[in-house]
Image (tube, rainbow, N blue to C red):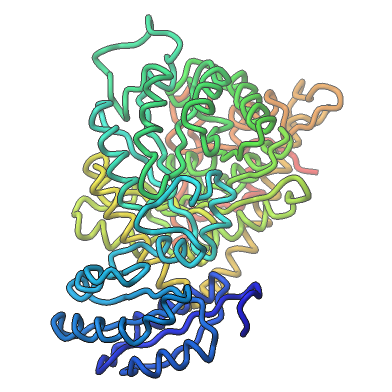
Length: 563
């Protein structure tokens, strides 16, 4: 193929007597994903043949490998460089891949444009193939918004991980270390409770709880310093927990200082119902809607952390799915253009993999019809925090197995949860290690994962859950219907019951949305009984018999008459 056309050509081979070509073929798969035309010359290829084929194919790039003795490799690569020197002088680039010892000898020659020794993340190789220097990365080489980064990393999902240690100094050092490792795309700042609730109220801050649950950010300068620490390595995006008071004011600070990659907000949580904010239930719903709308006006994506907070409180699958729909529905109603749908597996942790996958597929089936021009849905998966075992070796295995299952949804974002989280907040080194484990699971899945959604048990549960959730949503709507099952419960004239804060709050106080952990809560009922249906699904059950309780019957027992 002649030079000057859009598609570039790479010629690749294993040199000399080396017959190990798995690395070469993996590289060529990445090159094809990046839009290159690839030519594979096979194992044990003489330098003269590489030169001949590179000329014949009018190659833009020549990739060679050698994985045997370092001393022999050094001699062979020196001879190879002499053989192809004229081609090199004409502007053809040469790269090398091999074991760390041989790669070190290859670097010392000063001939190769890039040298890969197996330790580099996939994004580094893809970045190089897309024209970005690996040895001296620059900010402009990396996509600087969430949606652009997703497109840039495709077909691989971008990785996100929480990070926030109890001191600013340790967190600053850790952010720099994570960025330098080049394995994470989005650093999610875990800020402490005072930073979320009392950023603008130092008189309400309690020095004794500084750093409890995250990094004690206390000023715009603190945010700016954390962002500056990340300006290296692969220049990761940064985002932060939203505030639980003064929501829009804190959003302005975060967008200005860390270029908040996307907003994470809730409908029903982070208020007095869960003890993590000062607002009553109904006013907090309105506050969260306003925050969604504010970010929508800035053109920033929004993630609604809703469903898994019900799941973490042992709510049945149908409540999880209904909450997922309500979150996405409200985001669209508030003008959000890019909605990040969070899909936390293992919440509650005793779900079977089959039924967990079915629940997530049902969630996607429910929210997919909301997509339209101006409202795009991006899938984000994660492992359930409460599902990690204490044993760290077992936890590593759980992380990898969980992400492999999540890849059945082909997520755009994988929220990696550090394997150590059952014991302690992840250090920078543990964040890096967890991301490397996740990357391997993702690579394996993308190389030919079976279609787990085709499992008949998954398909059956998926369809049943969609049908049941439609009943739950109809029940929420009925709470705002004049003359309906909730006397005096009508929404304001012309109001959409699924976005009306009073109606949404009534869904909790009437028990349509309920979870066992809400018992003795001033807002929720906590009366729902739940259990395993025998197949690993998490369902409402009859409190007397323990038998699964169909959603229509559960709602009828609440005195709710469906249309």
